[in-house]
Length: 127
View 1 (cartoon, rainbow, N blue to C red):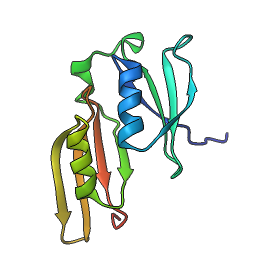
View 2 (tube, rainbow, N blue to C red; view 1 turned 90 degrees about the vertical axis):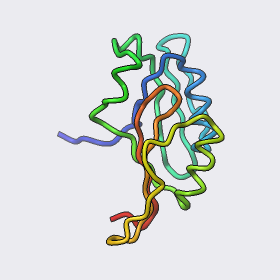
View 3 (cartoon, rainbow, N blue to C red; view 1 turned 120 degrees about the horizontal axis):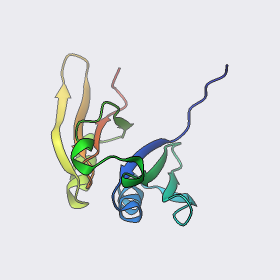
View 4 (tube, helix red, strand yellow; view 1 turned 60 degrees about the horizontal axis):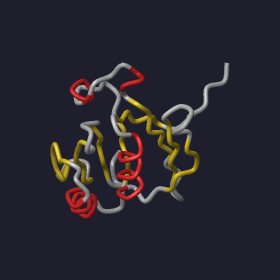
């Protein structure tokens, strides 16, 4: 059996608003909008990141449950500190960092999107 990657799916109470937030913060574009049929929006960017934004309600997940997700979106950026500055401007909430791991020589941090979905961010030096 062949298993291949697809987009990571982020749950939202307000699908269009959260898709717009990821579009601005991750420099993404809407590649497909299934809002009328499935309440689902595909996003992608020139660096190969692909996300889906889906209705949390339709999946039976409440906002309070999302902060304890066991699966996290992790992204790599050129400048973690600059990313956190943009994150703050756009309404994201840092949960830790930005921090520097002196032993391994990389910057990292964590944040929640406006709907409480947890995410991690690292720079290109992360092992």
